[in-house]
Image (cartoon, rainbow, N blue to C red):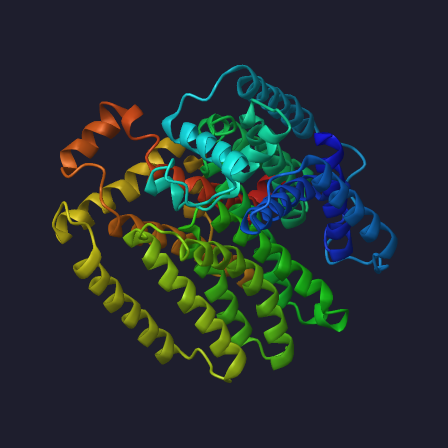
Length: 506
């Protein structure tokens, strides 16, 4: 029954993704549809719980089949011309063979680990318990769960509840498949970005063999799920930005540009549906898109509004749904959750401001907004920042942690040497925009964890945790928070002219 229900949703999302008419490869569509089917199922279960209804397997399966039949027979016929090239080289290189062999073996190892070993990690146990509470009590604010985990978004625990409703005990099984989807989509995105199958295979191999990523492919945490949706959303967002800069693309149907915006916005939204603080990271692509649209002199104001809405609505609606749920909790909200909620309100306000008034992001206005953001950050740190340490020590600890977390990504960090050898100023505007996202991501990461209470109050303890007992530091939330950063960094490097020249000269 499980395969009938989820299989129906998978085929349904595959048809819907096909209707977007921006992804030519069946393999990429299959991987993306699997990830979107997980998000769709979580929304269905969320609505089920909001209505106070118990999960009924037969009803869920019946609804999935009815929805699939409806979409199959009534889907609109779309034109076959696509934004991206649809043909792959007929001959696969040795790079591709090596990639498939090594990453295929790693996928099966992670799958075996997820199947044969129980959940032993403390956070994973809480997510599992929360899933059982969702299944048994259909209640979000259950006192069975400690407050910290009760206020987390419900995406992963809802999927756990879904699997347990079909008597699947090994709920970790979803993570190896998310790892596989990441690799498949990453390969195709790099191929379209670099127009080279060799580059796509080589850099996908680098990503998939990074120990930290593979380790999380069977850990029952939120981080791989969050990192997957955010990084893949950033890649589709890059193609959106690329098309905004290409005037000739707007001679065709604008629905294709909006499709990229909606797709990337949905993936960003699902990242925040897994970890709430990723709404703050979502502010980066949203603000950059507003800036790019404002500077564009080809698009009409109406088209700009439509593109922005296609990205902003799915990006914000997931977090907004969860904040609306949290407001009905009997327990008080944590300080960090309240701060993210205020940011959500601010992001909605900014979108409405762009839609309502014809304002322009001039340099003086951008400087003023930056200065205001700094003043607001200092005010928040003084009034509601860490209580266990002084403001200065909190900033020093966060600065050290922001630098040291990269030690656990050394297998991919070494690629940064190509950034030093490349003339970044000569890159195309879309690539520079993607580079700015990579610059602002660590900045937001620093702001988030400087505002949070540090795990230890002495900097010396962090030195010891990194150099003497790295096992204490490898699984801190700030280390795991960089999982979403590195696929984007590898993707960015894969498209550098230096890399293309190197592979072309082979």
